[in-house]
Image 1 (tube, rainbow, N blue to C red):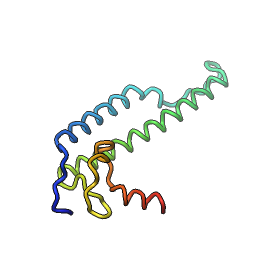
Image 2: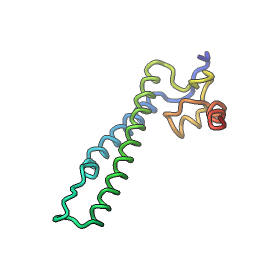
Image 3: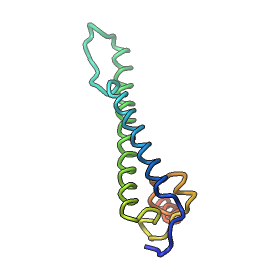
Image 4: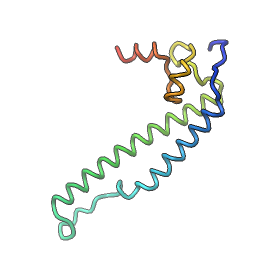
Length: 120
């Protein structure tokens, strides 16, 4: 790791991440019903309504998967903050630009390494 200090308010980053984590948890709770099993009883719902319900359920499940990915990124970032590794690239161990961290506090690669990953 570099001897340089990251010029970013780590407490502010942690607060922002904790707030986002709470927001995601609230959305997960409020959207639980849309992810529930779709009833396929033909006497209650028509075929097109069931198809719409299945499609809506699939979209809700995908949204939930994305929320879980974001929660995992937040947890990893909070751990890196606690360990003193926040703001350093996981590949080259150089500092990640502050503007990049401000845009996405969960980013783990500097722009050079992220670009190399995209090209591969």
